Image (cartoon, rainbow, N blue to C red; front, side, top):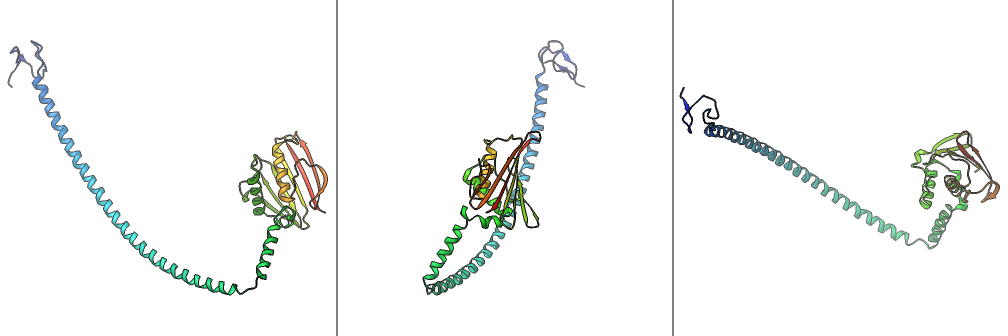
Length: 271
């Protein structure tokens, strides 16, 4: 084994030392060799990583090109189908137009009296939905009709408490000649509406956690809404018995603080 001498003082240096034990001079050449070896390894790993990246990019490009080719073929087929459909629709539209022209020619020969009759029928249908003609609505009361009436009233008045989410919230029961619709509004009030074949209507309302108070806003909204929808009159603030819009009304209310609710009972008989 060759002796290692210090380049500064010429003293012998044991193997593996990084500095001279005689003059404490650092052995820079050894460090440079180590650094060069480390740099060579780093270059090797960098080259390997670059090759892997190139291979991955090549695979991705291949799959993208293949996928794009499939989509182009599919779009071409869809375009052919669309063109065929458009041609068919155009032919159908031409036939329909010819049929309408023939019908228009035939209709123009009908006397003007037919138009007058249609106008009268249209005016009669429009009048039937006014508050004075609620009898048809009440004799055919069902969840869909009631839900539509409630939503229309809420759209017009924007109430804070009264309202429902959907017709599915309204349940139905049938017993003999009596139909009962019942639901819970969005603020928790329980409401049931009974109708019979004679057009008589009974309403029961229970409002939880609210003491009886004529100024309670939730109660006001319910009485106003049901009165206007079913009878064409506002029942808010009304009590005892009275006659209006062809009905004899009897309204009763009571407070049940020990049970945590207030309730209203409204009986309306056709007079």
